[in-house]
Structures are given as C-alpha cells and as structure tokens.
Amino acid sequence: MSSPLRHAILGAGGVGGLIGASLARSGATVTLVVRPESLAEYPEKLRLESAFGNVSVPVLRASEVPPTDVLWIAVKATQLEPALGALTNPESVRAIVPLLNGVDHLALLRSKCGVERVIAATIAVESERVAPGHIVHRSPFARLSVSSAGRSLLGGTIDELQRQGFECRFVDDEPTLMWSKLVFLAPLALTSTPGDLTTGQITSDPEWRQQLEACVRETAAVGTAEGARVDAEAVITGIMKMPGNMRSSMQKDVAQGRTPELDAIAGPILRGARRHGIEVPATKRLVAAVEQRAGLVKSRLAPRLSS
Image (cartoon, rainbow, N blue to C red; front, side):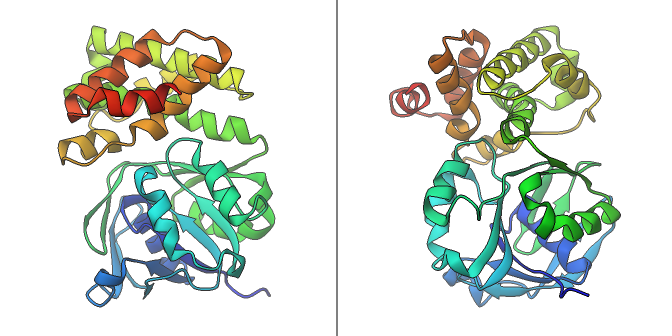
C-alpha cells in the first residue's frame, strides 16, 4: 500500500481552505502556507461549513512551501507572483495544481517551476473565507476538473474528494479544460459585478440575460479559435439552471474594495479576440462597466487587456 500524499495549500482562502479541509478530513497531511507575519496567530485547525458536512480538522502551518507531493495554489491571480516567493524550492514539490481563474497563469508557473510539474486544473464553486481558518462553502456543488496528466499521482485524491461530495473529472485536452471554465465564469463575473446582481437577478432580467448570453457566445468563439471544444448553448443552459442566489468572486472583490481579477478573467478573451480577428462587443462593454464600478483608471488597465 502506498503512503498517503502530503499536500500543501498556497492561498488558504475560500477555495484553498475548502480543498485543505477536505483533504485533511480524509486523513491526509495538509500544510497551509501563510504569510510570515500571520503564522504565529493562525488557527491550528481549519473549520469548514459545507453542504458536504461541517468539520474542524488539524493542519500544519508554514511560511514557506515545505517538501511535499502536491502543492495546490489557490491565490487570487492578482497575488500570484508575490505569493510564489513562498515557493523557494520548486524541485521539492512533485506536482503543482493551480486553481486560479483564467488561463495565463499556467505559462507563468511553468516558466518558473517546469512544464511537467504544473498540472492544469479548474474548480467551479462558491466558497468564502469569513475569518482566518474559517471557510464557508456556499454553493451546493464543487466541480473539480484536472488534466489527465495528473491521473497517476492524483487518482486516489480525486477519488476521496468525490466520496466527500465533489464532482470530479479528468480531462485529456488542456485548452478545453481551461476554456470550459472561462466560458462559464467570465460572463457571470462580468454581468454580476457592474450591478452587484445575483445569478437569479441576471437570468430573470431580459437585458442582463441578453448581455450574459452574448458574452458566453463571444467567449466560446475565442476559446474555439484557441483550440478548445466548448458549447456556448450548453453553457447558457447550465447557467439558467444554477441556484439563483449565487454571487461571483469578482463581484465580492469589488464590493469589498479589492482589486478585481479583471485581467485574468477578461484579458484572455480580449487578447484572443484581437489575435484571431473576432468581434467581442458585449465583452468589451461589460469590462468597461466593471472598470467603472470598481473605480479603475481605464488608461491604466485597458492597455494591458487589449495588448
């Protein structure tokens, strides 16, 4: 029998905390990597409230990534580069599984840590850290998709997460894996944020629903041009079936005065559209509306999004 895997979590927020607590509940050794100034006072247990079951589990804490089998990276895209300062020795990690929004982080991580070490993955969930070490999983689902390149190492871990209630799958095609989430995430983030709307408010309002559907189709067109197999109409149907009280992480960031992940979420669509000569007017309008809502200086952000 093989030894249980060691896991480390870089970014113990809503997503990282959910993964960490779920792995610790399964009996795995889990280390949370936190800022040095927070280490002494960080709770020794992760508390999770979830439809999958409430739990309080012991975890290890460190200010740097220790030698480990799997490093799950769940920081905001805007925080990735500074957070990687805690990864002082990438060679001491067998596999890195980033759960960030967008697609561009894969190239950055592979340039720093090696192509084979970084396993593409996405997660669809609403989960929030309400206090250090206290995670509330709000959506009735958690959908984890992982590149088939990680099957040999992560197969047992994925099986355990499925037993706890996660919906998990391995995906052979990386562009399809990454763009399948973006086609779903970007339209919801870009429509929910300007008006601070829930999913139900968007889908029940004809004007907002029209903008959402247009953004889905534009994102799918860019994803297809980038080599992904995505079905815009299936995504729209899935969104219409979502619980009506869900809110996007971008929407929450803006409401709390934090910088939104606009470049990570909208940037690949706008840059891809420009490369492939695809018109994306709805996405551009929504990005401008988010910029206005967030009080961003357009001249500072727009050149990066359109470059």
